[in-house]
Length: 178
Image 1 (cartoon, rainbow, N blue to C red):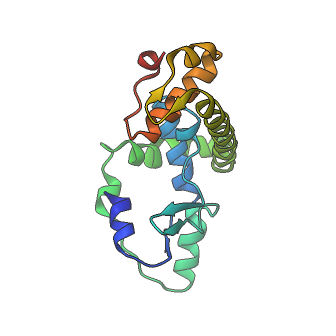
Image 2: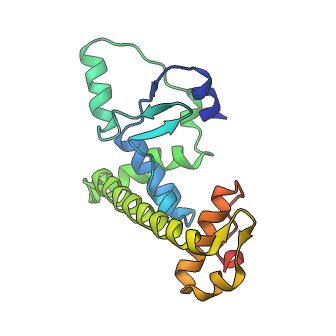
């Protein structure tokens, strides 16, 4: 729904204020959900948005630096009151988990962002391999079962995930996919 709203704005580019803390939260939440490399990639710096693009120019900047910048320049901003509701997993991480991590692992934000970039690289490579495999075993009518079975199990699962995603099908749990 959010991305549909961004697309409805028109224009060539929509810039969002996601920051390094948001990226760390996203990556850890995806890890806790058991996501694969696509989910662990976090939020990309740039992505397609209809005929335009969506960018996150502050994705590598810690939230505290942005807030400090705003305070020094006497800027006003609005904090969404839902951000204090610990029923939301993201808020729980922000309020209770990350402060404890910070005390033991002060570089956790950068480490999680680096892990996200590594996962994005792995996801991109998996997509290249899936496209090659699907070119050999699929056509407009579907996937050739014998061709799928001839692939190594990891490549078969990778190709099947890509085929399902391209078809707009929600990704089934790994055990069902297998």
